[in-house]
Amino acid sequence: MNPDTREKLMNVSVATLATALYKRGLRNQVVQGVGPVSRKGRNMVGPAFTLRYMPAREDRNQLVEFRNPEHPQRVAVETCPEGHVLVMDSRKDPRAASAGDILITRLMMRGAAGVVTDGGLRDAATIGELDIPSYHARPSSPTNLTLHEAIEINCPIGCGDAAVFPGDIMVGDDDCVIIIPADLAEEVADEAVEVTAYEDFVVSEVKSGAGMFVIYPATDPANLEIFAHWLKAQNRLLRVCPARYNRGMRRAFRSCDPRCAANGCAVMSWHGRDHLPLCHPEFRYALQ
Image 1 (cartoon, rainbow, N blue to C red):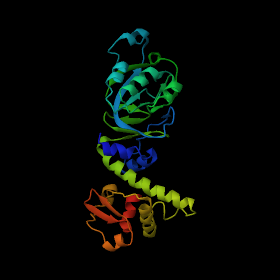
Image 2: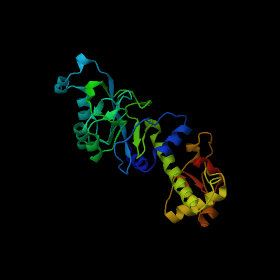
Image 3: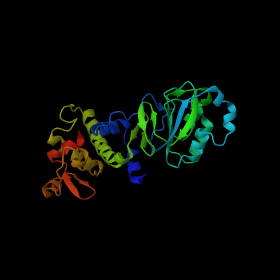
Image 4: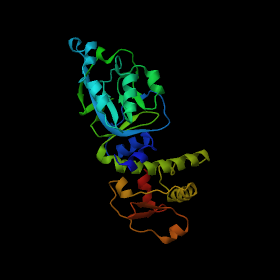
C-alpha cells in the first residue's frame, strides 16, 4: 500500500470516507453492525486479507480440528501479510467467536494492521487491551467450531452486508469500519483530507456562532476566502483538483491570479500541475 495514502487515511473519519464513496456511486461500503472492541484513538488502515466461515457441521468441527496445521483459521493468522487487516466473514452471527485473544495477539506480533469480523470475538476484554485495532459485533465466548467452519482464505467475502475483495483498503476509526476499493484509495484519501480541513474550519466557525447555511456545504465564495485565511493561520497547505473530486467537472485550472496570493489566498494545487486559488468560486464543488 502506498505509504502516503496510508498516512492520509490515518487522519480522516469513516464518515468523511463514506460521503466520498457515496459521491462515486458506492453506497454500501460501511461494515454494518460492527464496532471497535476498544477505542484506540487512531485509525486502522490496511489492505484486506480475508477469511470466510460457513455454517459448521458437527462431524467436521470437533476440537481435534485445532491439531490440524492446515486448519484455515490458523493458516490465515499465520499468513496474513504485515500491514494487512484480517477480515472475517462470520455471516453476521456472533453466537460463536470468530477468534480469541491468542490468535489476535499472534496477528499483532506478526505486524497485522487490524482485525475485523461481523461476528464476535472471545476474550474480548483481553483483546481490547492489545495494541492492535479490533472490530466485532459483540463479545462471544463459544469457540468458532460451535457454529463456524473456516473454509476459505483470501477470497471475496461479505462482512456486515458489505462486499470485501482481497486488497481492498480497510479503514476503521473509533466508530466503525469502511471498505475502499483499492483503485479508488488514492483519490478518496486526497479528497477526504481536503474535506476534513474544511470541516475543521466549519466547526470552528459554528463554535464562534456562525449559521450552517452557505458555510456547509460551501456555497458562498466569501466563506472560501475566510477559509483560505484560516488555512494560512493554521499553517495547513492543501492540494486539490476539483475536476478529480467531482467527475461532472472537467475544467483544468493551470494558473491563479497573482493578486489572490498577494491578498493571502491559499493556492490549492494538485500534484503541482493544476492550480486554483481558494477564492475561486468553482472551488466550492470540491467541498460538497
